[in-house]
Amino acid sequence: MSILKPRTVSIPIYQGDDAERLAELRMAVAVAERQATQAQAGPRRGGDPSPSEDVKAAQDAYDAFVDEAAERAAEVVVRHIGSRRFRELVADHPPRMVKDAEGNDVVHDDDTDYDVNIETFPRALLTFAEAGEDGIRTIVSPEFKSRKALEDFLDDELSDGILTQIFVTAYWHNRSGATDPKEFRYSPSTNATSG
Image (cartoon, rainbow, N blue to C red):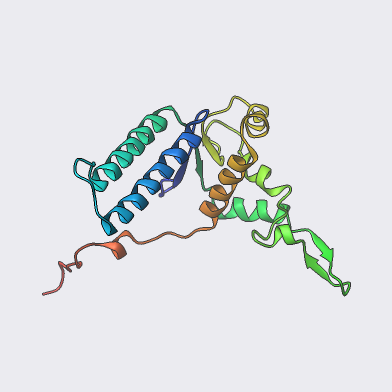
């Protein structure tokens, strides 16, 4: 029986052209802010809208679309698989070794950031699943009926960039430590036992 509830991380995947539209709206905010800054430096004509009103309107349009796009977005949820399982998976996919100019064995450039074989490890981590209904798995949502269905999702439905984003999130989620939420308190902690 586990004493810890597993930590999870959600990665939203925007539908269709929503990510592109969000980028356009973000750019519109940046343009409005730049124009507002320039307008503050020079004279304004009577009847012109306030630059701050333009900025607020652009920010409101962005926020409204974020909410709308978030409702449509698919969500991939990953969890850590536990230290032992992760270490074993890493050991099964050691970084590739190549010869440098002097003939020495060195880690392949692509493998240095993660210290694993970056060609094989991402798929192994993302498809990791222990047998059984309660078995630990990396991707906990959406649920897939089979490993083949998960592989088809990873290979055929996701762009390479989104696949990389999910892998990087899962990797660092397994590598990261815990933080103490008390460390970030807004008010000083009081010790009830001190007299």
